Structure formats: structure tokens, C-alpha cells
Length: 380
Image: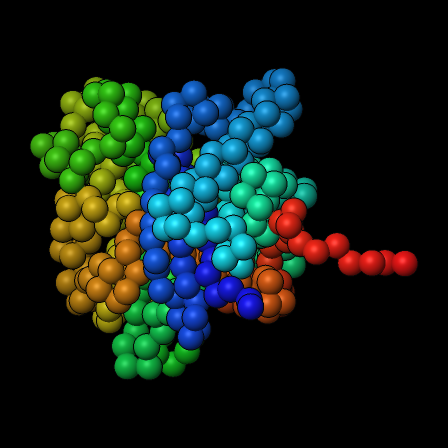
């Protein structure tokens, strides 16, 4: 009997944990059976961050970290199986996004646009004994797309409404939006930084992993001159399709902007401006697409109350709600999406990203790495 249960794996730009979702697609729509986070050990996280920057002698580290991170992904899968009393044979497949360490889809940056996600799927399939689907972005890139964002295709599957225009805002390390118009039109792109700069700044100044509820940002005041400098970034003016990541929005970018300011301001004021930057860039992107409708929030940023209050104030014409109100938990959205993408791949169903990433045609995304417990066929 073919199973309808899939597992989705992803570690986002924040690199704080592996998200693992257990999803049943019986009946077509996803039912989340369980969801766990597996913390990324600090020494592994530092290796991943190191690989996101340009250094000499990275190839050995890349190879080792590819396997080490895959072992953590497999550990997460085996944990969720044990918690739920399931055997590998009861899982149809794993959809593993992996960890992005470089995303350069632009012709003006590289003659050969590319994106790299690590977390060796061979290792995952071997250690879990479950067929693993991975490397979801590069086929879209090969078809002329940005390779990101690709989760909007899943948003269309579960959130489309013929009665309401909807915007799904995912706030992870980066922020991206999916616009679902009630006439069936879809678009989506990365708006810019989500939590990544706020996380970097509070880690540097207070040693905290993130700004819980935006409390530190709320203790500061937004300096208008700093906001002007932060918003002076060509990426924000680019027309979609577009995508971005740590390649642009990183410590170097923030240091350069603070140097341009030409004066020292209290660190809590910088944090307030970084939160305001996330709100402002999302607001501007939404207002270019729609004047009113429903906004569905997901991603880790959905738990930042100051950020949510800022978005509600900035977009008063929209009804703002968490994705959990529509059946998918905020922090598991992307993991569930990659379980769905694995299902599409195994079913040999192309996914249409043409209006999202700019690809020339729908593509079957992901490579399939079969489990070691398949019955060998006689080829004689």
C-alpha cells in the first residue's frame, strides 16, 4: 500500500534549528501530524555561517559540513518517527530543502547563476531508510527562474480564495510575500531582510540569539536619518521576480550603513530601525500589489509581537491573521511545503513557478534518492 505520509525538512536563513514536519496528504490536503525543531549545534552553525562568506580553503569544509548537516537532518527525521511510533516503511518520502549557503541567481552577479543547498540527501536516505527528495531550487534556475521563493506554489495550493485577495507573508531570516488574487493571478518574491539583521545586531550587542517579542527594538526610537540610509538599497527598487539572502543582507551591509550614518547612536535605536526596515519593506511590497484584502502571516517572525503590531499599523486596510487560523502552524509552514514538493516530485507533477520566479515553464523539481530497502529488479 502506498503511504500518504511525508516528512518535510528545512533550515532557514536564521540557521537556528532544523524544522521537521510530519504530514499526511490523504484526501489531497495536508494534515500536520507532528512538528519538531532540532537545534543546530553552535559549532555546526558557525561552519554554516563561515561557508556563507568567501574564504580560501572552503572545499574540504564544504564537503565535511554537507555530510555533518545531513546527519543532523536524518537525526531529526528519526526522532519524529520514534515520537510517533512510525517505521520508515510507513513514510512515502522526505522532502529536504537543506541549508542554503550561497544563492546567486542574477546574471549581473555571475555569468552562470547558481544556488547551493547542502545536507547530503544520500546520507539522509541511508540513515533513515526513507526515499529522500532534495535539491529543489536548481531545476527552476536551469529553466530561467530565480530558484526562489518556491513556497508560494504551496501557498496557492492551500490558501487560494475565490472570495478574497490574499497576501501570505513569510518572515524568516529573509521576508517574502505571496500574492494570491481572487481572479487566480499569483506572484511572489523576497522583500528583503526579515529577522536576519535584527538577530545579528542583538547577538553582537547583547549576546541573545534573537529579540524576543521585539522588546529590545521597542525600547529604542527609530532614527529617521538611519531609516533613510537603510532604505537606500537598490534591491528594494528591483521589480520582481527577485530573491535575496545573506549574500546581500549581512553584517558587512549593516556595518556599511552605520558608517554612512556618520555618528554613533544607541544600539537599541539601531534595533528599532532594523525592525522598522522589515515592516517598511514588506508594507511597500504589499501596497504595490494590493490595496486591501487578507494578510496571512507565517515564519518565526510571526511570534515577534512588536513586528506583528508594526505590520498591522502599516497595513490598516488589510485583515491580518496568523496562518494557524487557516490550518498550518506559523513555524512549520515551510517544512510542510517541502513535504508537499516531495509528493509532487514523486508523482512526476510539474510545479508552475513561472509567475513567481520567472522560469520559462513549469518544472518537476528535486532529485530523488531512493531508500536502501527497495526491492531490486532483475535486469537480466
